[in-house]
Length: 205
Image (cartoon, rainbow, N blue to C red):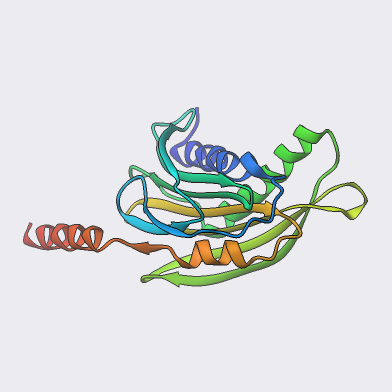
């Protein structure tokens, strides 16, 4: 029988397959026309290189669902995902990053029936409006050492929600577009007001 933590781990890995491998070998070098978009939950704003779509994705073998805001364009695949954990104890951020990278590698290898390795470019600890983050950039490397794709992501937990922003581009693209996408993420003022009201109510109780 699966524990809540095991179900969460599988749910997290499934989510990252959706986010990262959807465009793990995307090619293109298009200049971006950035426009600010509201996330699927309404809690965040972030700049996309075009108009994104939103959808709700049920995560298999769990009671979790992800609110996904994403866009595919010639320059790559851009996604912001928000998954409410419903009280499930989360894994550490590094475990989530490691699992997501490995699943992207394994999925890409399976799709192309060819060995794929991972070359980690960077991983840093940061801060998003008071909560700890992990930011990473890796390249998926094919047979003969050829770079196939670059994956850049930002993860953090906030108010029982795991938030992830992920970009998949051609491996030879400059990281400028991915950096712009990640750095443009911010909370909506309305979200902060709702959180403040909730804290006041909790103190009152």
